Length: 368
Image (cartoon, rainbow, N blue to C red; front, side, top):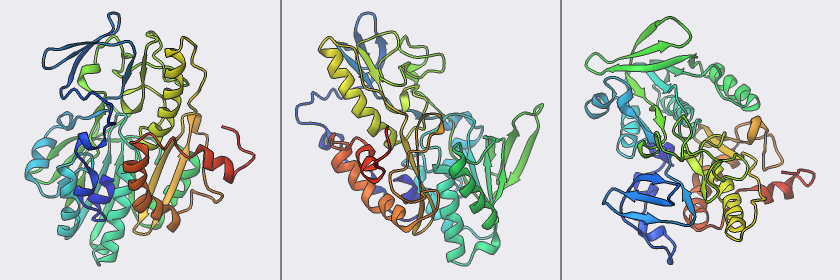
């Protein structure tokens, strides 16, 4: 939803609600933060000094944005109106004003050298900004640049081809293997390391700079017994059960499930986790398997969207009976108007477990 805010298609007030209003009625809400895990003792410690005993534990801590890892970026976000980021509730509110204030020069959009939340988000705002500049008569004054640390424009070939075509047709400069390492907001310069070289860097002037920050698991998971060596909770990719502690499960961005970190992925994971946790609590082995399903609605312009859906190993798992790699109005309507309602009124209440049943109706021969 932050993409919609950053592009001027929605308002920040539509992206949040009080936590208490979305929790189940029978939930005991401890208004504190986790400070550590002791899985061998079945306890969780909190920042206010409590030690909480558990029989079963579900970890769903999300991931954190580490703006500080880019030299000068925190200062630029605070002091330069032209530097923005759709990954933060404060900085996302700078994006559309930066687009409106843009006059002439480089509009640069970045993708970091780490796993991130919603890997399609940096491209969404790129395309929406390009479309906005075109609609308001600024496009001929703008040099659109997408600098990504990746070696491809998108990880799934079917959608990568369409996105590459968009980049070519819309005269967007694509630079692969470029990782943002410094922002000099006083001189409006962005410095990128060229990955795969011996310390080579490139410096770009910017009139607008949208940054997708380096991300990681939350600090509390670093060096924790529940985590793998990268800091993410170490779970079986099918069952969502911890690989060493059978009474622990995890899902979402904080887990090391090898799929794209999106809300759509969580909807599928939650269904599998709930069923498997129920079995484990009954003394049985978990029997349900998550297939890696995730979705990335790639907004290409106002009114059009590519509905990318895929699972483990890049397997395409499209729901609807048309080629979803092609930008469509129906996908745009789903993304902008239906999905926010789906999130607030179905997913958070446990009534939405992903579109697998719909997919089977539309593709009767398909087996997940």
